[in-house]
Image 1 (tube, rainbow, N blue to C red):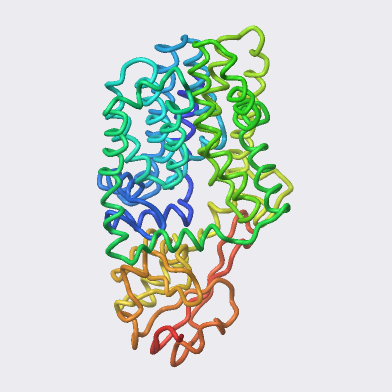
Image 2: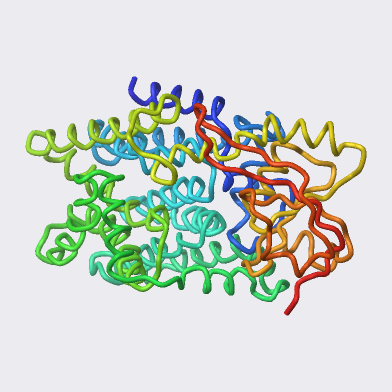
Length: 475
């Protein structure tokens, strides 16, 4: 009943809120399907393309794939837990994921994190079956791993743990003599190979971009900010069983009986990503969703321990679920009826309103005042033109100029040379003159300004400028 209620909540949510700018950007993936992109693999674009083909390029069509993946994952976890442990464990595993705000977000916002969670967790389950029940699951596990890697490259860290498991567990060393063990990873590489070929043809753009993208300055401040945020989001109980408990389990594994192999496997799956993200987050500034693979093993550890020792741990389970449901409730209510004393960027639900003027005021202006000519709209980041493309649907797709800004999908779709000497409609955040771009155009003339509001309060301002005679990037 709880799972059904959450599914209904997600369906209502995706149909009644604007998509956010990242989702709009990935919708451009779906418009321009490719084996690879500078930011991520193609799976998120394929998922969006599948459902927008059925339901149209709107909030429901763009996001329904995320709802189905998370809902399907909940059912798969229940069936897995019930079959290999107990019905109670199945219920615990399912709810630890579907009723957690970190994973709930994957069910209402379509980003690469949604297929990453779906395919990586199924991969972890399939390799568990192979190692503990029947080696015939090795090849299917490798194929699923390929799809996980095509979703987001961070699936590599659980993959390393999966590969290390029979090496570190003396009771599973026979798998090192099984050709299917090696073939499974070969199949993963084969599935992943279109992305590698795309990169080889495009100057290894993804790897160059990611190398620069994750090297932002970090330190104690950003380190504490990231892990404190994760502690609050995932909940203290699940956080403990994902961050602390796996180390204890792995250190004491040799002293334990054979029936502890399962919890050791899932602990290892969490520890390898954890070590990477712990170390790297001290040197680089990370977004809170990046270390999500750390928890893919943790909730299995939590679910198995709770299921096997229900009387001892049931209060912790109830606390975790109630805590998570309260967070989901707060975020949902705040989205529709803001009641928390937070403002601006501190209110994360504002992201559903930052572009509210695009769907009405700006759309009408573009149609009524500028509709007699096919204009190319441009901005200097990927978010604004993506929202323009989804909500205004101009005949000529809006583009990102990327002047003193990193390359994006638009850099490959519309190279700078295609835009030189063109007159562009420049949309700029705020009302100020876009002085940073003045040297790149012959003239820049103001046309009109728009305000995105929420409940009467102005969240963001945007201004249209006629930017004539684009000169191209100056190096």
